Length: 301
Length: 280
Image (cartoon, rainbow over all chains, first blue to last red; front, side, top):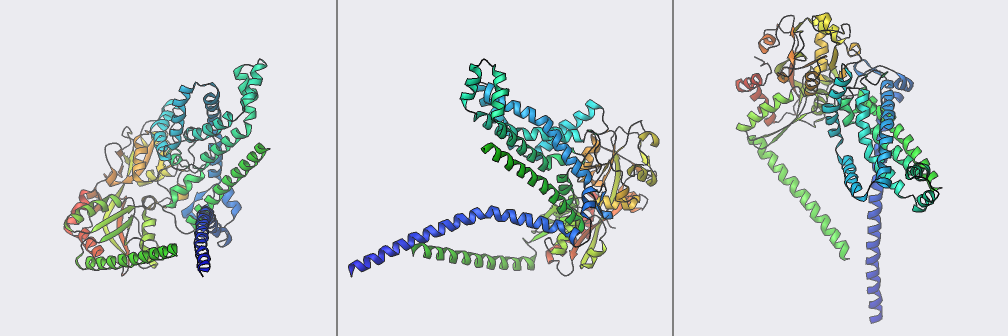
């Protein structure tokens, strides 16, 4: 009798334990699924809204991508100028941001004394934490008038201003990721190179940087993602004109600012076309992520 | 068992709380509706009407205990909110479109607004005809020299497509969005246009009367100065109505009282002080 009750009690306590285990693992699963569900919901919503004009209302997707006129009130939706603006702004930012970011990372990881690195590193981390709209305000108050006065432009809101702001914004991403990659290069590589009589700079560029290549590429792609998705800082310095930029001094409207600028006022087809703009932007980001995955896979090998 | 009961208790408590809060809020709103005290009127819409509505609300809430929440999100968004019931009242700085009217909206003109063409203070051009304004914004005239000013290229600053101010401006000046010069800077909001124009001696833009200050220079239209008197006398041609819109039959007592206040002598006086043009 007593044995029986005992076993029942043990069974009970075990049941309780199992139940707790089950509930916990379910809870964790739900938390883990939350981000996946959010992603699916966002993709689903953007694609549902954005594809509607092309599937139901008979707009041509080709005209949408390659059309140069964006006049929502006259039913003209062409985002070619914005695609060009987004691509040019991102490439421009890369041309300035990658060398500066990479050299900063090399300096921090290889050359700087520990004390100096302790000052510079937090500064760069802090740069990453500044809200992007503040970059925009800085750009509008400092960079735009500076460009206008220095180059005698009629307006400082330009592709060049966007590039400068984006280059500063992508620095922290590039520096931190590249620095980690460079630090991860085994010391034996450096020692071997130095022992063969190669100078420190020679060692860095011939041995360390090639060894950290995949990490550095990752840094660049992440910086690129930051640049192409940036909105609030860009909206203030871009000028948002609807022209296909032919020079650095033209004012531009990248894809992101088109959405942010007009969403507040948009209704009906206009709003759906802004979602379609989002799809194009999303495709860019997807391609970037794909490239990133390829790079890390190579790095693993 | 312990945990199950805990969970059950928790659920019970939650539902109890929910029921309680629902009850109390119900009770509150009933009492509020009866004496107009402490209730909230949600208003959203035009960034042009917004500053005026803020001032009216501040004065109104001094004497009445209700709460007025004003969101400046643009005319179209405000009208949409009024249709969907997200906001009780929508603010618009343009006339309602047909499809908007069809969804059962009532409109009240609370004041008139003047739009003024502005330039950098150093600009010598002080008077333009509507035709010349059109030529500037459609890119036919590209240098201030052609209008009697300095030899400077014109930089056009406009609002974004869909903005009530832009719609009103284009309607009065008679050009379409497609005709707007493509290289124009697009700024979101009156304040943004003012800042852009104030910092660029090439620039020309348009803003509401309320935003006029000494950082920018105003342009007369056909020799008529941009003043409230001239709008009321129907001499100044760049003007438009400020609307409050609400869904028919869904205006609360508090909302109606606020509108009555705006249309009263006191309310109209405040509108006049705020730089808008009273209805009467």
